[in-house]
Amino acid sequence: MFSIFISCFLCILEEISLSLAAPAPAPIPGTAWNGGHDVMNFNYHESNRFEMSNWNNGGMFYCIWTPNNDKFENGKLKLTIDKMGSGYTCGEYRTRNYYGYGMFQVNMKPIKNPGVISSFFTYTGPSDGTKWDEIDIEFLGYDTTKIQFNYFTNGVGHHEHIHYLGLMLLKDFIPMDFL
Image 1 (cartoon, one colour):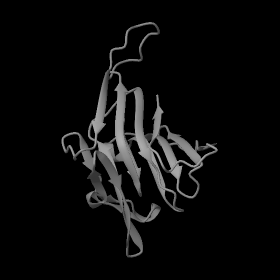
Image 2: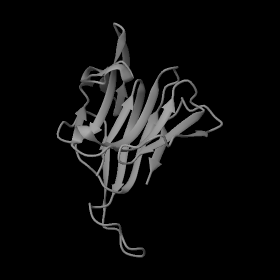
Image 3: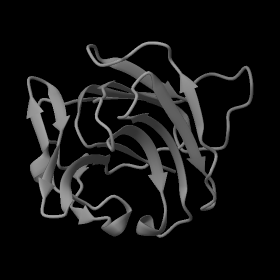
């Protein structure tokens, strides 16, 4: 079971769409779909469904995640980064629900800026009282013609793969998804 995160130092999100199966054993091939579809629009903060991150990740990124960096504008969620002393304040948005298997999709506009990551990921780990499992889709701000994929299982990562897109993705919203 995963919680869905959108973590951006500066990006704009149009919508998150999840096609999810009910928490159950994996389906038997050829059987009917028993899941649902959950669309999350960003006209306002739905505190019963989402959490605006409010914590400090220390020396890893020198970032303090704060709700002040999560803004809703014209049906979109804008996550920003601001300089603060020797570090930064950043935006991160998380589902309160946990999801099992399914298709996870976001329409996202990443930013091009060295040292910045615009990401969409699933996570469960020590902060949830479980082992660290995570699936990441990340735009590395130094070159948005590339996208990085990574995953962690039982706390073991280092499965990074960089895919060369061959074009710069900054002007339009990009649908990103994984199963």
